[in-house]
Amino acid sequence: MTQGIIAVMIIFTIFVAPLWVIFHYVTKSRTSKMLSREDEQLLADLWQMAKKMEARIQSLETILNTESPDLRKKS
Image (cartoon, rainbow, N blue to C red):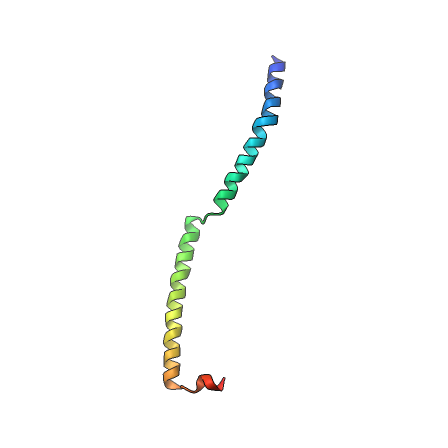
């Protein structure tokens, strides 16, 4: 009886446990390469804010060029 338990433990330790650990970390590696839903939402929000900021900067540059066309030549 105890020899059977020892044999099962040896087989588990030699074959099953290392494969289990390897597959665990392979799975962890694959999931860490993907963005979470929160990260995707944050990225989308940042993209929208960047687009708005780009439009505002463009508007400001247009206003500045209209009011003071020589401003960029002085810098």
